[in-house]
Length: 280
Ligand SMILES: [Zn+2]
Image (cartoon, rainbow, N blue to C red; front, side, top):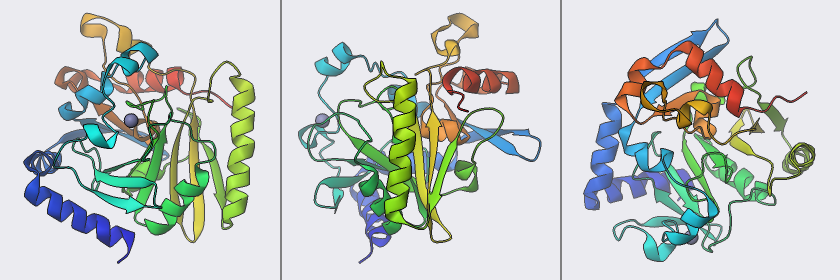
């Protein structure tokens, strides 16, 4: 059985036995969204998704992370959550707080920090086995709510999530039919970004990976801030938005209705300019 079929079957089974997941997926059908366009070139969709509050408001500083039980370690996962094994070292799990159709979280078995270097091979294998999906990575300071446990995510592809570079934020595209070349190009870009942010343990980035027309494609979003200024404002000026890979691609998650109602084009432009790192 191929991996996509296995995941489809996992979703069917898990919705039968895990009420919380079933409700969360039903909720996704009723979710409110609104769109903004910049000419014909770029669209941003804002999704009102209150179930993402825990993730958006997650404290990811070292102290807070060390104090809480890691929710990606097998012993702390929901009792009803089952997984599909991948490469003998990952579990593919239905995400109980979905943003996308067939949204899965893919933690590695061991409790090791969120670092992408040397994981590109695993990412490319996933994109080969999941041609209908995007696979995405949030750096430890770029939207990952578990910066202490390596994990990837994936969900069904939509054209909105495949948008490349545009005037609002940077996106570096790596594209090749050759797997080895893709990995080497990623390493080159990684080293360049590392040079730009020598103080960071890992250059700040989000990555969206997929296959298209028999090519591997990686969209890298270099970052200069974890969260925009709006996140830290108070009262009516605050917008509780904590961008990850999907937000950088063009799907912005708003966890509070008041933010969803008031967010405007200018806020979106400001958010991108604050968190995205310009590259030459
Ligand atoms: Zn863990």
